[in-house]
Image (cartoon, rainbow, N blue to C red; front, side, top):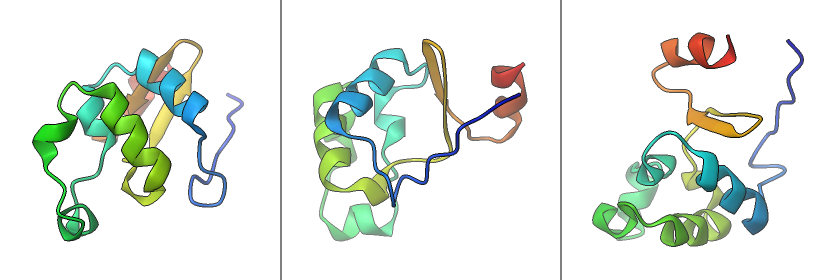
Length: 92
C-alpha cells in the first residue's frame, strides 16, 4: 500500500485540512487532542473540547504539538491509530 507520511511538527495541517479531518473522523473529536502534561500546563479544560469540532480545530491550529497521533486518513475516513491494533483493520 502506498502511503504518505506527514511529519506534523514540520508540516502541520492548516485549518482547512484540520476541518476536513474532523469532518470524517470516526473517533470522538475530543480524542484528537492529547491531554498530556503540556495540555495541563496550559491550564486547558478537557470538557471544552468534548463534541466541539471548532474548539479542537482552533486549538490544534495554535498548538500543533497537542495533536494525537498517529492519525490515519484514507479517502473519506480518518481514525486515531491508538491502540495500534486499529491500524491494520483501517488499512485493510
